[in-house]
Length: 131
Image (cartoon, rainbow, N blue to C red; front, top):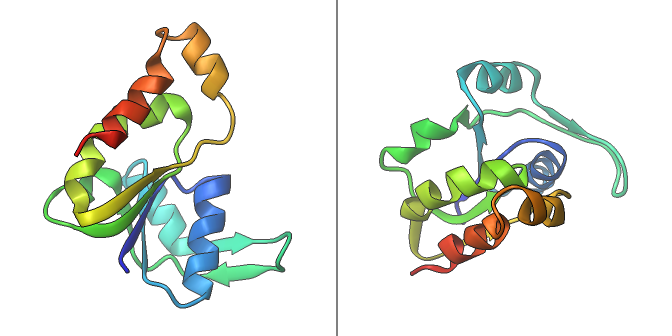
């Protein structure tokens, strides 16, 4: 299964590191070329429940580079909630038929929906649910 992780922070980094350590092919989408280069040079190191894991970040590129022909069975959208709104609609075209776009956000959703644009966070769910 080809998996793309969009957003390599706490949640995205943890999922990417654990999947790669288990032998699954994982591609990483960074915010920009500078972030991708830093991640590629340093790799990912995760500590905590389940023990420490270090992996090379071989398949890492700016998110926009994946928009030209790449296809994935699973896309994990692990950005901040306000960034997810912008990027979610772009990602649906990267899914293989029958693929899954899984949004995971660490906090900020109630605050986002209550203060930014009314139902902004619900809009992300609606975009993800479209066939």
